Amino acid sequence: MASAVESVQSGPERIKLPPGPGFFASFEFVRNPYRFLDDCARRYGDWFTMRVPGVAPFVFTSAPDAIREIFQGDPEVFHAGKANRPLGAYMGERSLLFLDGAAHLHDRRLILPALHGERMKSYATIMRSAADDAIAKWPINQPFALLPWARTITFNVIMRTVFGIEHGPDAARLRDLLQRLFTLYASRVGVLFAVPWMRIELGGLAPWGRAVRLHREVTAMLFQEFERRRDLNLEEREDVLSMLLLARDEAGQPLDDEALRDEMLTLLLAGHETTAASIVWVALRMFENPDVMARAREELSNVVGSGSIEAQHVNSLRYLDATINETARLSPVIPNAGRELQAPAHIGGRDLPAGVVLAPCIYLANRRPDNWPEPERFNPDRFLDSRQSPYVFFPFGGGTRRCVGAAFATYQMKIVLAQILSRTELTLVQNYVAKVDRKSIAFAPSGGLPVIVTRRD
Image (cartoon, rainbow, N blue to C red):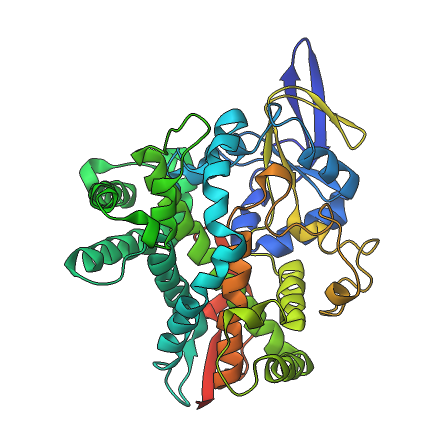
């Protein structure tokens, strides 16, 4: 069992890390992450250290001043890519998530324009259509889990807006491969792929071996699609892949095929799972707070009227946006950010050695009573009344590493939730008690949130 006070060699001296739970106690982070973090905060305060097999010690903090110093720190010292590296098993080493320094800034400049600004408006119809297609298939007066359907919606949105692929045998084959790959990643054994010593191939027979085989098939199909797409008039297309194929850096160079593949997989695997889990958490919070649901419906009626939600309505749904933010505050789908120190640093009044991973804790920062009055209370109005500091509220990370897909995800959530609220009456299955369940990289309500549709337009 690890010592309550860890230390890491730094030159001739040993720098003590903050105290934290022992090795076996840290497994509770996988089983019940929110409870684990709450327990650590009560026991250790703003700082604690967690040991994870096969990786560097994680030093968690919820102190806003320390989080500001981390997010504003020199990117050559604070490496987010290295801290995220365990997730490379799912998305590929060339993903923006795993790059640092100049390489990260280079690729970020090429990718960001495709997921921001006016580009969002062109995706509104696709997002609404994906939601409507799923809602039309929901059974009436029969229990079903909402999370798988939310995944279906967000998966279809990604396939159409990011990949730009809809019909034909090749599209069907790619969809099938990607869904099989994601299902394996989202399984309980797939969650363990983040641990290097769990990646055992056994000639393709072990779970990791099956994942490697599926990844090779996906790569072959994507590379073929890249070549086919380059022969088209990409200026007339609006999907993200086509925009990235057109993108050039200052030297006139495009992203290479490996980088394109890994960004596509990141947008699919990270983007659709986290967004789906977020949608389901919002639904749960509305069930628990009927007044919030009623107010969100009233806003929809005032903004959209009796028709369908369109791009011009989205920015006017301020209360729905506040509800999404308040849900992210209390139930973040990702509990922490990460930066691996490349040199010793003095953060928040503490000396910390090179090699540790600093983990600004999204979950705990969101519940500090000094920043959030009545922190356990669900109150969307707090996001209408004031603008929150990016070092107190950072559901998409912070600094130059803030998620490039944040605007895309929020835009999609508002449209999907608007369709659910306007087209259905949903209730929770009786006696359901929500717990936290980890699905792939995202935390979601247990059981996929079992619901019943009592009315569907």
